Image (cartoon, rainbow, N blue to C red; front, side, top):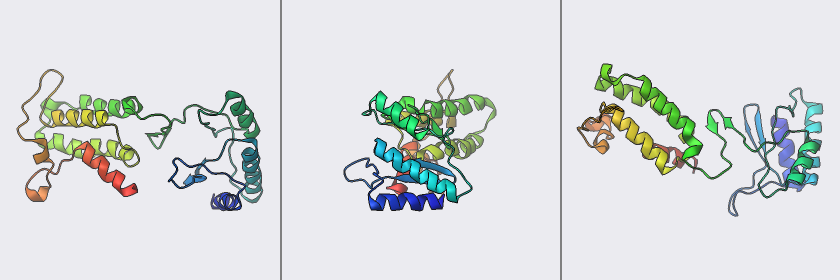
Length: 223
């Protein structure tokens, strides 16, 4: 794949490959690699399709790994006509899609982010909480489950995406209720303010976290 990356970079530098920009101030995107997976970005026109096909042919003739076009998908901007979409998809030999699905468990977002976008994450959190019997778990065990299982579920998504406020608030509320022993049948008294529990263990607290702070921390790493 490194060879293909060099081919694409060279095509961008010579001007034959036209990358895209997500905003006026953003860096132009032509391709992204992760392991043996590849995402290509370019202007949608017949000339660019020819450039992509030519690079695929050069790469295929010099490398054992081949681009699997039937398993690949092409996603077009909403500004592209359906006629042009069909034409470019056929020339590429790659089926088109309106939904890129998920990658490594995280939704590939191409529309406005909303609560609906993360319903699967919410359902997984709810599923775990519903499966844990509050009545048979001590406070220490509930805290341990929250810090290990639920944190790991959230981390994968929050490393790349800032969750909507409604999603963050909902998950925080569910976690607080679980910690204090609340359930669908009744709400228990919260003995301490949540911000107190979120203080570090060095300060004599539990070292808990709220979803917003955790999400913001991850976002700062990629800013």
